Amino acid sequence: MSLKKNLHNLSEKIDNLSPVEGLAFLSDLFRGKVVFSTSLGQEDQVITQMIADNFLPIHIFSLDTGRLFPETLDLIARTESKYNTKIKVLYPERETVENLVEKLGINGFYDSVDNRKSCCFVRKVEPLKRALKGNSVWVTGLRAEQSANRSDMKKIEWDEANQIIKFNPLLDWTYEELIAYINQKNIPYNPLHDKGFVSIGCAPCTRAIMPGEDARAGRWWWEDSKKECGLHAR
Image 1 (spheres, rainbow, N blue to C red):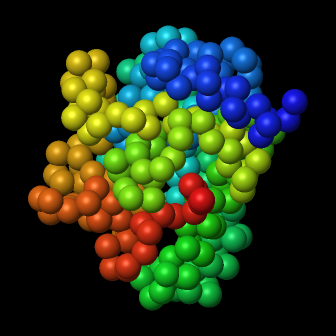
Image 2 (image 1 turned 90 degrees about the vertical axis):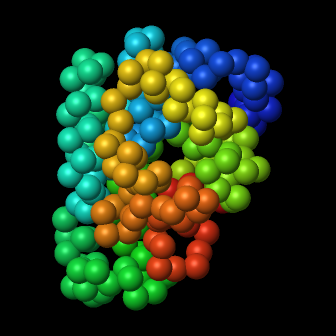
């Protein structure tokens, strides 16, 4: 049976499992073919802890776009040390980035949504496709309450763009549950979260949010869009 046709059966088995149980089930069923993409956000740090502390055979990787906050890069080292694990870091293709900057300018992504999406594609989407190729399950830290366009997601989905099963183990967690778990387990996190940065991406494209603002309001704040970069196209 193809991966896509197997979704219904997987959903029935996973929907009532805890995040750790779901991760363990899938990593056993698709041994060596389950990968986790971490952007070092709070949700992703929780999943990294679950994988590491339970010795689950899930490969962890991250995308360094070349425009990340120093605090984010430092968190990679702190996380590897804390959990005695390795996070594989992938980078965009040098020539493609150079061509993008030559065409749009170093900060050309501010000029239009299309320019910004082109930058996201070169720096994030293309490296992600390389990382996912040949695997069966892609684990993410998405939560339904993060934004309106994520509210109808399911724990197990089919990602058509990458031809892979996507597993969102924390989908139904609230922000309060997330923070309580981080405090309980003493999980390292980005200090920018304590300065009002909820969703953290590239430095030029991320700002702190004001009280009452949507969690994604600090991402690409200068444009009126769905606040997505293309990694989780729907």
